[in-house]
Every structure is written in structure tokens, then in C-alpha cells.
Length: 266
Length: 251
Ligand SMILES: Nc1ncnc2c1ncn2[C@@H]1O[C@H](COP(=O)(O)OP(=O)(O)OP(=O)(O)O)[C@@H](O)[C@H]1O
Ligand SMILES: [Mg+2]
Image (cartoon, rainbow over all chains, first blue to last red; front, side, top):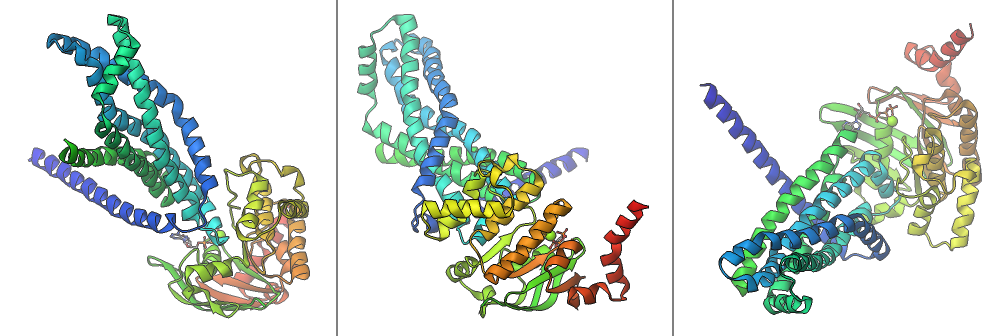
């Protein structure tokens, strides 16, 4: 008896979460529609977009650098004994490079970016909403959606691919250092092995999907912040839930995109 | 010519009816004061006029256009003629005082940088805060924020200004100065103003016409003297409370 009620309760909580999630997806879709309606309308706020890109870059560069380097280093350390076991050590650089380029680099960079940036945008726009700064813009005949949301989402969409390329580069360096420490192989040989195994059809989809991830991070943070209610409590909620939702959406979208690219290019 | 005509305005949040069939006429060049106890819907009234909140029913005419039915482009043309002082000042946190003041000028007008600088200094002198020009909003006191908010509101020289409690949180002397500034603006630019306030001294300086909101309706309307001298218990309480406080304090 006791058990069934807890189970029922858990199921109903799960149901509630699920319906909340779909509510958010519906809200996000409308918000995205609004984004695409505004993004092509002049005036284009290039200055603002650039300002936000600079800020995002400065804000995320340190953590992203450390991460990139460590991914390469650790992945190589972990794989080396395994590859050795199968007598396939020669494939180690290629394997690490492929994993980093196709999956780990883009996804881990995106998740870190989400944690750092989505919450920031959520909190910033949220506090602007509750202190009526967004209303103040609107009443001055300035389109706050365009000025605040479109610029931030664009900045996220454009900067994440750049960060990803940078992370991939650092991860490959990290991988080399790990191999160098145990085998002392020549850097030119290593890079040759990497370039040889990674081709255009690995690199392009890997980096291209980060445009989607960057967009997700920006739009989720902006959506949560822009629609904040309930004063300062709401600002906190907007900030945390943006991280959760954007991370989840990044993983889901990644799954779909990988399925698509694999079925196209193999 | 800016006159505001509000007809049968109604606004409710769920079953909380805040504005209940309100009709008002505000003449050109008038300083129109709105009184009312906290939570009666004064801020909501101002926000409905500029459509920061959508009214449930009614019509609001500004320069003979019903703002409630305008599309966003036309609405923005009307909004450019309106100044709005928020109760909480609503300064842009991420911008300095200078940038806050320049923002509406750069966005909506085509002044040269020199003209913009001149206007900023001029308006800051009016609110006696020229020294704050390069501060960030976080570095300002509540009353200073209010005055910068006021400066940002009047810098575009709007024809219609809506003030939400312009003197709340200011000391009596500054509060008097701000009230006089509002009167000056009205004289110099023939601005039409709607002023929400609790401050009787401020109202005495500026009001040419006053109304009292109560339970979603306009309960009293007339000039200030006629309101303060009425024998109605609610009005007597409303207008005498701070005077009694002062007297008791003195004893
Ligand atoms: N966004 C909102 N959602 C729900 N109810 C609201 C909202 N804004 C205002 N209200 C309600 O409308 C009523 C009037 O609020 P308003 O802010 O206009 O009061 P006010 O007269 O300006 O008071 P004060 O003098 O304290 O500023 C209040 O009962 C408030 O609870
Ligand atoms: Mg109010």
C-alpha cells in the first residue's frame, strides 16, 4: 500500500516534470520564431554582437583552455593501455583526434559553455526584467528583444564554433604530450598521423553542430531571463534552470545530429 | 497638442479588478496629479497608457489616436513623444550614467556627439547631479537613481511625461527642487504631465488638477484645494495623515 502510493507519487511527479519540459519546449519554439523574425530586421546591432562576443570569449577562455588540454591528455592516457593490448598503438593519435573532433570537443565545450554562459544570460536578463529595465527600453521605442536577446543569441551562436576549434587544437596538443611522455614520439609524425586520420567529413559536421549548440545556450538563457517572474527569486530560478535545460537540449540535439550525419556520410 | 483621453479603462489580474471603468481627460499643458493608497493601481494605470500592460477594455487617446489599437510601429512613434519615469528608476545597470542618458538620444534621434554631450550635462545640472556623470548605477544612492531616472526621462524633451512617484525617497529639499523642475518643464515646453504621488507638498507645488483613485474607481476629482478641504472622512484621513504625524513629532 505504502509502496504503491509512493510509486504513484513518483509517477505523477515525473509526469509533471515531463509536461513542464514540453511546456518549455513549446515556449522556446515561439521564442525562437520571434528571434528569426527579428534577426533579419534592420537596424543590425553589429556593435552589440561584437561586444557580447568579446565578453563571452574573455569569460570562457580560461576554463575552456584547461578543459581542452585535459581532454586530450586524459583520453590518450586512458586509451593507450587498451590500444596496446590490441597491438594497435599506431592508431592512438588518430583515434584520439577522431574522438575529439567528432564528439568530445564539440559536446564538452558546449556543455561547459552552457554552464558558464546560459546561467549568466538568464540572470542578467532576469534582473533587467524584474527591475523594469526591459520595460524602460520598450517605452523608449527601442525594441528590447532585438537589442538584448537577438544580439546575445547571435554572439553565442558565432563564438562557440570558434571556441570549439580552439579546444580541439588544445586537446590534440594535450594528446601529444601524453604520448610524448611515454613513447617520446616526434611531433611531426604525431601531427601527420592526426591529419591523416581526420578528414573533412569528420571535421565539418563536428564543428558545424556547435552552431546549433551555441544557439541553444543563447536562446535558452535569454528565454528564461526575458520571461522571468516573481522578482529576485525568479532571477535565481531563471539562471539555474537555463543551465539544466540547455545542457539537456544540447545532448538531445547532438543525438539527432549525429544520427543524421552518420546516415549521410557514415 | 497633446491631450490624453481615457475612456472606460478596465484592467484586472485574474479576479483582482485593479482599474474598473476609469474615464479621465487630461488637457494639454496640464499637471495632472493622481493620488491613491498603495496598491490601488496607480502604476498599473500609467503602464496601461503606454501599453507596457495591455488593458482589458477601454480606449486611450493620445493626440487623437487610440493607442490601444495601434500597431507596434505607430505605437513606437507615439512612445517617442512620451517620457516615463519608473517608480524604481529602472536605470540600465550595465551602462554608466552618461550612457544611460545618451541611450534614448542615440537610438531615436540624430544628434551629433557634441549636442548629446551638451544635453547630458544640461539635464544633469537640472537634477543637480553633474558629478555623477561617469558613475555606474550601482554606485548611486536610491534618491540619486531616482533623479538620474528623471534626467533620462526628460532628456528627450517629451511632450507628455508620466511620472511614477517622482519625489518618493528624496529628502524634503530635493523633493521640492524636483517638483519645481516639473513645473518649469511644463512652463518652458508646455509639457503635459501625469504625476502619481503620495507627496502632498510636491502636489501643492505642481498640481493643476488632481484625482484620487480608490477601489479601482476615480473617487474624487478637482483642484487640490477643493480635495483637501472636503469633509469626506476618507479624504480627510488621506490628506491629513502626514500633517498630524509632523505635529505629533513636534510635541
Ligand atoms: N504584474 C502583475 N501581476 C499581478 N498583479 C499585479 C501586477 N502588477 C500589479 N498588480 C496588482 O495590481 C494592484 C495595483 O498595483 P500598482 O503597482 O498599480 O499599485 P500602486 O497604486 O502603484 O501602489 P504603490 O503606491 O505602492 O506603488 C496591486 O493589487 C497589485 O497586486
Ligand atoms: Mg506604484
